[in-house]
Amino acid sequence: MSGGLGAVFRDAPASLVGRQSALERRLDGLRSAVKEARGRLDDGLLDEIEATAARADGRLGLSARHTVVAIAGATGSGKSTTFNALAGVPLSESSAQRPTTAVAKALVWGEPDAEVSDLLAWLGVPPAHQFFRSTLPDAPPRGILPEGLILLDLPDHDSVETAHHREAERVIQLADAMIWVVDPQKYADAAIHQRFLRPLAGHRAVTMVVMNQVDTVAEEDRPGLLRDLRKVLVADGMRDPRVLGISARGGLGVDELRTAVRRRVEDNQHAEERMAADVDAAAATLARAAGDAPRTVPDVWVDDLVRRVAEAGGVPGAAVRVERAERRERAGVRVGPVDGAAVSAAVRAFADQAARDLTDVWGAPVRAAATGRLPLLTERLDAELGAVRPSLGADAGRGTLAGSAGVALLALVGAGVLAGLGRPVLGAVLGALAVLVGAGGWLAARSARRRGALDDGRALAADSEQVIGRVVRAQVVDPVQAELASYHRFRAGLDAATVSRATR
Ligand SMILES: Nc1nc2c(ncn2[C@@H]2O[C@H](COP(=O)(O)OP(=O)(O)OP(=O)(O)O)[C@@H](O)[C@H]2O)c(=O)[nH]1
Ligand SMILES: [Mg+2]
Image 1 (cartoon, protein in one colour):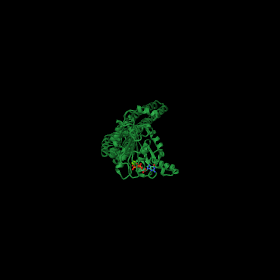
Image 2 (image 1 turned 120 degrees about the horizontal axis):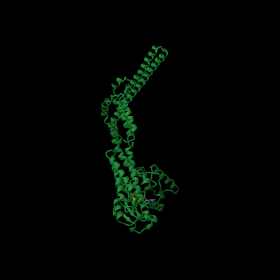
Image 3 (image 1 turned 90 degrees about the vertical axis):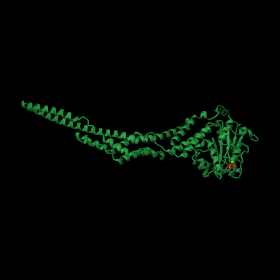
Image 4 (image 1 turned 45 degrees about the horizontal axis):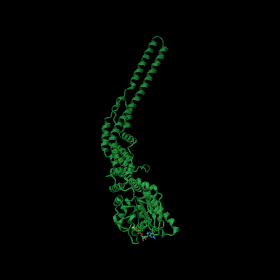
């Protein structure tokens, strides 16, 4: 053991709790996501994730000084032989008879104490199956394995004995790190990969893969065999897998395996790494099962919905009618009734946008929230739009026309007077001026009237859209937001659970 490691052990608290608050926060996030997903996502899946969180809690409350390394693999691959080779003592029965190991056995590289016995009890290893370095026959040299290692020999996961599989699966879920033992015959067996290695692809940091029985393969074929194993693991989703070829029976590669185990145990990070990998996997499963949605409904979607409902209510047409009508006729223009089919299509398009990347479990309620009140929506729109009247602005043209008519009249009178006084030229000029002022006034008045009509039309459209916005928010957007709020709480939990490794 290095001096550095001694320091780590001296400084380490008795349990993992003290230094794992980041992991605890992630677990809390995971649990709150599960809570929010109850009643929506599959209960079995949620139960499994809760069990993962409970296991992590259990491990966090136990010894931080020990690292549990489980030896797992198919029957006859040589798990017990590897266990014995690492210990340097034949502790676990290995045999040509299949299957051999029925219950997990533990070798503790250290002294028995309360902490280790709590951890072994939690792992479910009965006292009769516990071995301690200090009590081993022929006392193997202390330095061959790292202090704090708890090595577990597991039953197989593939023989006819289903009790073995259950025991192996149970312990694999609890271990801090794993040594997967495969052999040249069965390493590509689809069952092992589908059931175990694929789900553990994200657990690379805590998984060692060992190709045992390389003595049964010609020396020149061994590199190719290991290359192929690596390829199969990559296909399982494991990034850059590290594999080691050994012959547990012959001792080949056993020292290298001891070194690899030592390096990992001395990191003293496995319990945390394993739990982090479990939380990552659980959060990814939940995220996949739920799908994706925007955090809130963006304003542009609401604007688009309002615009489409306004069209369905004939708002643009009514605004144009106001604009074209004589002023006294404008007050009679009405908006609506709405075209129910067009409103329904607009609401469905809105719901589709909100639920587009969600899986059905969240998407269906979001859609239902959007469309659930469609009949009421149409009714309210008709009632409220029916009460919207064009508001008539001041008749700006009238003043202009009256003013210019007055000036024109004055000029005309002046022209007559001047003509009467024998100043016909001046009178004609003034007469022409009167015509010009009159015509100009009439033109200005007409354009002012047009502007007024346009403003009245626009005001009607704006008032109607405001009413539509209010009704649509109350009947469509708010119910969708309420449904998404639950989804957002779920995502917030997942966000907390999937905080980046750098900040852990
Ligand atoms: N040639 C050869 N045989 C091996 C090697 N390792 C184990 N064996 C033999 O393979 C057989 C099975 O070994 P075990 O260690 O019992 O295998 P296991 O994986 O523990 O099997 P279960 O407990 O049934 O799951 C025994 O006969 C071992 O002697 C090896 O490296 N080379
Ligand atoms: Mg065995």
